[in-house]
Length: 151
Image (cartoon, rainbow, N blue to C red; front, side, top):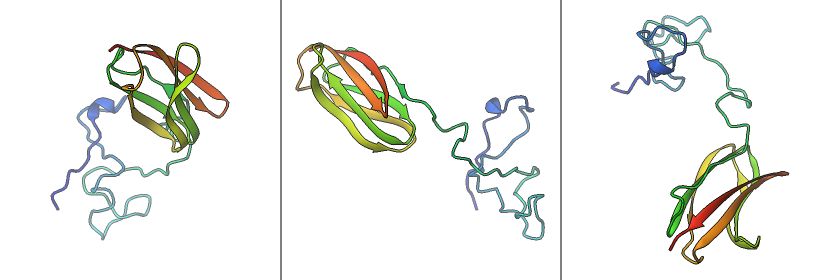
């Protein structure tokens, strides 16, 4: 088998020896060693010299988003398209665009989203030059950002 062993980037291993390699949890080296030997957790030994501690992921895993984040669009100002990144927990989400008078001019997204960071493209071709607001709504939370269309 000639697969990438998926080592953890040593620069991200806080407080550990930068010359000591560690596997990512999805590495093909995990539980693929000699079937005659077991790791301390009772699984098949890992390929390599170091035991990989296998942990179960909880729904509140530290790497999964728990907050709502609406990033500033880029580029800004733009013509005719821009990119918007947002992070939400799982649930019903809407992202809408409003003109300076507060009139809704576009719905970018509306529906159920998984807990993650998402990226959307907004096409402002049908809008005139000016300042607009985009609002991310999730449950009773709302975040507003401003962008400019320059034609």
